[in-house]
Image (tube, rainbow, N blue to C red; front, side, top):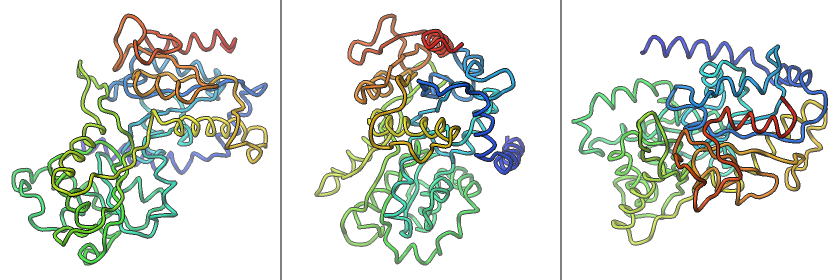
Length: 380
């Protein structure tokens, strides 16, 4: 497992150096004979993948968006509440799993909006929480003083009373994040207040993370000290459940947020103040429109003429998702030009449309969804 991980990491770095936006734009420009009037946004978990396995004929479906020579014909993005890794690394993994060429600019993750907060917290001590490489994600966005919660907790002796019973987890996390241990001098942790906590992806050690976050949030950013003003805390998404290979849904980041909030509110005089990003917030869908516009606009030399605040240049943007309360609700709330398509390969498994968040179209698989779009748009 470790050897395979090293191989993938080395391949990723080589690919990242070779892949340039200009080259991608050139490939894309040769594929378009005219400006497309539609774009597509794909959810990942439960639509394109289950775990690390393609589902619903997704490799074949996505290849239909490319020309025979591998150049892109139809503009699309992956719009997911998942994350934990930098967009470039996730793009590489998707390319490998699906057998296509995915650009980092096509990957919009739940934590992608965190980069908008660099101006506010870029020079402050922050803590990044979640599976994968949360500190690497925040560092890549431009945050200069980042510690993963694994690293931060390791600075405080006895902060986690259960640590002796899970040393294997601590050692594993320390090894995975070793290269970030020097980003913040250890002494600063005991004198500098944590200004914000960012829950980048699903936490792995709920008991430890809830304990340490409560310490940070109730003391003004200095665990073990007196009570102070609550630092900011941001969640990449608020999904209660999501679909994996297991038959029934698994608890997601929203469940962790509920647990943290419930405990914090019991031990603190004021209710937890927090901000959630991710679908179904309309701002996420509007940003996806802008990214799709940039993708096409870069082909025609009118990148800087794109109106980032007003009407989309697309007649239709298709959202293909499996979660009615997230994908479909978000597309509905955003309104024109979004058209929602619900698949049965993930959270939703009903025979009929969802009763509360009814999609514009219900299909069995993502391949069926893509076939419908291409036929409707006469783009096959």
